[in-house]
Length: 249
Image (tube, rainbow, N blue to C red; front, side):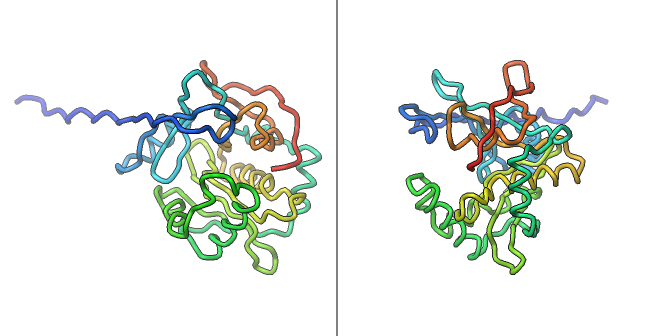
């Protein structure tokens, strides 16, 4: 009797986007390589591609692939070696009264109102500033069973921070975060990242994925607070040299 073999796995399709204006470096054009989540085994694919420097946006996994530019470097925090510096310890103390709750990935009007305040204060000239309530709902919809909304609330229940977070086999990945923009000195963005490091340690996960680092970009400067960092280079993940610190995020 002839051996019955399963059909070969269908190759995963990848696509290349058209060039558009880079949101980080003036005078540059951005292009991405992308694939889409759809099949039941896509959680494993997401784990593999995270290790290859991909990020998630809705049901799309992407990585920059720009002509003549390699400024976007994937970075992640090494949880075991993380020791908050003095500046970050102050941030944690300032926000010690906040309560974090991990919720299903569903949009609420309360979240959207905070999202709008954040965008208008911090990114009013960006492409996301025109997002509607439905656009926001599409952004946070449960594209993966491992996606959670983490809400950060004051003792009186007021919502001041939100993170859309994926639980990967190798760590936590903050897909997008937003927070009450004032007062800026409270550094809620950095506090949310510090919470992820603590939560990853509680779950026994080795890394927190921070997306991309771009040298000289003020928008990326806060990530320097979270040493030790690893960066993805041609030979794989490697320690990232210290980049100094930053008090804004």
